[in-house]
Length: 498
Ligand SMILES: Cc1cc2nc3c(=O)[nH]c(=O)nc-3n(C[C@H](O)[C@H](O)[C@H](O)COP(=O)(O)OP(=O)(O)OC[C@H]3O[C@@H](n4cnc5c(N)ncnc54)[C@H](O)[C@@H]3O)c2cc1C
Ligand SMILES: NC(=O)c1ccc[n+]([C@@H]2O[C@H](COP(=O)([O-])OP(=O)(O)OC[C@H]3O[C@@H](n4cnc5c(N)ncnc54)[C@H](OP(=O)(O)O)[C@@H]3O)[C@@H](O)[C@H]2O)c1
Ligand code: HEM
Image (cartoon, helix red, strand yellow):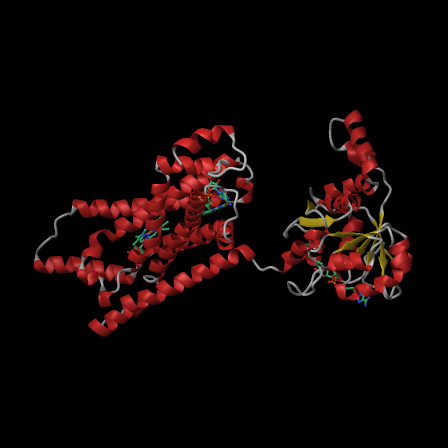
């Protein structure tokens, strides 16, 4: 709902749930289009009080006024209110609190103690706590719980803390529209959710005040799900970068006295990027394998996975997307191979060598097949990789059902892993058999990169064998080896195959 649209709702929402219902039923009776709701909506403005005329209080007040609310600010210095949005009233706290049943506290937690002096006045009112802390676990009690303890007769609702003053000013169009709301009194929560909706934002009911810890921690987190995938990718990149520098540059310099330091610009990144992409892709599917083995071992799915596995499962999307980014870089680096000076020089000297020797190498069909096959496998693998990335966009994932999503993510995901692994295997070909492929005894980086993908694919192959897949599927459908209550459809299975 855009801001213009939402402001039309305000009249309806501001007058309480009963009037909203009556407006809706009026609309249903007299109109077939939603537009008359605006005309039928009562013109009465709901008054909302905001304590604090700082950045957040002013931005929220201005936004609410644009959406049809009448705003009264409660301030320590009502006379000094030059920055207040025109049209708003500024009063001392006690007088402002009298004007509304809903009071939004746009002040810091550290200032809450002055509210105790207004205890009687605030009794029975809805107090909206918007506050954030400077760091996670700063206080033993959450801000909203502290407020509820300070003014026990009030109805505390936590909301708006994940929206910034800047986003409210800029129309909230380019920031998250989601507003987490929680509170112990459902009617008060509903009133606050109505306000959220009328501002063109999306309320998300997180339940009672017990949820405040999660809500207050949310704005303080920095890409929580991306942290591990990014750290991991950097660690793998660093390892393979230094490994390749030693193997391809230092070795040639020390043993052959050749300077290949320019490999650092393209050759080595074009080695590191696909290797990281392949390993991360395999790591996306490895936790599913661990989960399957655990479930088979335990004979039930009704037991929690260890914490590390839970966390790993939860960041698979981010792991996959980081892998896609590295694969993308590999494709870009590959595009420039033909225009590289080093590649053109090697090609020219090869041609000249044949001319000097007066001998043309015969066309090697097998080599032609190998070269075309590994590139074709890479292209197909990359195509499916991109498809996985596209289906993870919220707009796409919301438009497919769970089965379709799993088909793409799980089945096509494994196919992507098979194609990318095959691409690397065919690229390597028989090179791993040559002794000169092991300078200082070090295997080529691509050989190391194949270890995890090959392990994942081999175990997956074992897991899809019917004798293992059947009990695993049954377990995932709710069957237990030692059931507390026996379910009919799985009785036979427990006797026969497991
Ligand atoms: C580019 C890219 C984008 C991606 N985007 C997304 C994305 O948007 N969303 C996403 O979720 N993943 C995403 N992934 C990760 C990955 O593709 C999916 O997680 C995929 O579903 C994993 O498949 P799987 O077969 O290993 O496991 P799953 O399909 O998760 O699981 C296999 C089986 O285990 C069961 N199972 C799964 N979790 C549990 C559990 N906690 N308890 C009990 N049983 C369980 C399931 O019922 C299923 O039968 C992405 C990957 C890539 C490469
Ligand atoms: N800024 C944001 O983007 C944002 C986003 C989400 C949540 N929040 C939360 O919103 C609240 C306000 O943030 P802000 O950025 O607006 O802070 P701010 O600019 O510092 O404003 C705080 C206001 O609180 C009032 N105040 C200060 N000391 C007080 C005291 N001792 N007693 C009573 N009132 C006092 C003042 O208003 P008067 O001078 O009028 O009394 C002051 O302007 C905080 O809890 C913050 O965590 C802010
Ligand atoms: C359009 C798609 C792709 C093309 C055209 C392509 C092409 C290539 C080429 C030309 C090489 C050899 C590079 C060199 O000699 O320096 C190569 C190597 C490699 N590719 Fe790809 N590739 C593609 C996609 C992928 C994807 C999606 C992955 C894995 C996720 C991948 C993994 C690898 C790996 C691991 C190597 C070996 C790197 C090394 O050790 O040098 N490729 N690819």
